[in-house]
Length: 496
Image 1 (cartoon, helix red, strand yellow):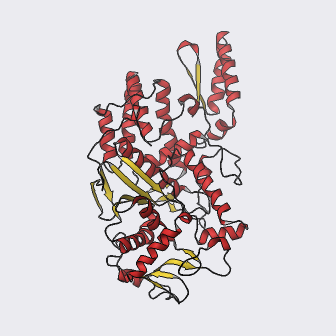
Image 2 (tube, helix red, strand yellow; image 1 turned 90 degrees about the horizontal axis):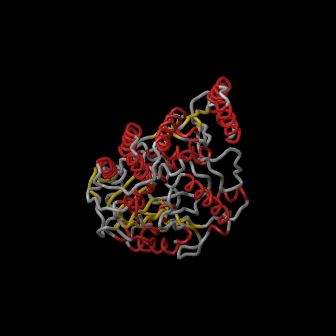
Image 3 (tube, one colour; image 1 turned 180 degrees about the horizontal axis):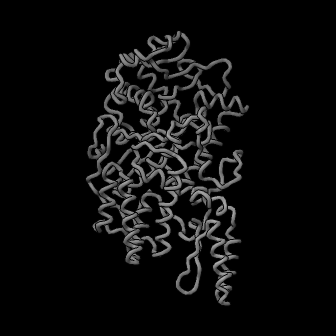
């Protein structure tokens, strides 16, 4: 996925990244000069993607975009977990084969990614394609005394035999043991041990098991990523990333498995995006605040029986902007006021492109605005600082009718996946996140009806019937439609 032309790559040499393991911000180090091997833990595909997934998808999309613009050759892997307990339960509930269920939700995930402008990773392995590699790692761990077969047929990892367990999450074995509330099962020697291979259960569907030296069964969750990352990228990974809830136990267990089997270091740099809250609370179905991506970005009347859906472009880019305008490690709160604020802010950038039209320009990285943008992004992918540069350019473009500033704003925004639509069409698209009191009327009035009223107003002005022209303007304003008379006698409108 090469960038050229407007986004001609450069090599900054000064990119600093916050490492979750060391809790420090340090220069990015890669095993091979100019190459970044990045592995990000992806979705378990048994349901539609939610806002927490959106945070992760967009955060690491921006990371890989900036790495490429910075001149790195990026090998980006984001895996798919297509076999686990939740998937099996959902398939049984629906009386569906596992593959049919997971294919549907993978297609739905891809629809969400397209809606959010998330570029595809270079590799998107499915766990079920790497079972042989998982069994190889389990065999190595067993030969080193780090794995054992339980009486129940499962194969478990012996946590206490791996020195340094807990180094990523900062949890000690004593703390973990003190917090343990589950009795030792028949198959585990210690409650802290975790499963590598699950023996097949009689009531589980036939398509959920593989033959192995340990009998028929399926892999545990954690071993999947160790096999996929090692098989596709090797060790050490330059960047290993994921959501905030993966630090423990998933990533901690990945470290134990991979380093236990192969020695060395699993990843040079660990990155985790921050949590997504909904109305200041953790998102949960039990709290009634669970939000899927498509709940925000799909056009009204979409059928959940379909994986794909028609996107509302204004709301979709607003959600991406909402995510990008905050630093990826910060906590974000999805709430109506915050979304309306994001919509108004993004609209201001698009209005600049209407006021001062400009195509994207080739970026001169020596220009002050470009340097400020670069400095922000090189500081641990500080998109909040980068977005601030866009607004500075918008002010300059509007104040001075500076088409170069407007074009540069659009080019830099493109690196973040923003300002990708025709500005007039964007501002005429409906959205639920406009000013309270006007949003319902604005969305209800069709573009055809608005165009007809604008044409009637133009005719009234030509006939010098200014009373009627003002009546039409006031009617549209009351319904959330703003008019702007531009040079040449034309009238533009937007939803506000």
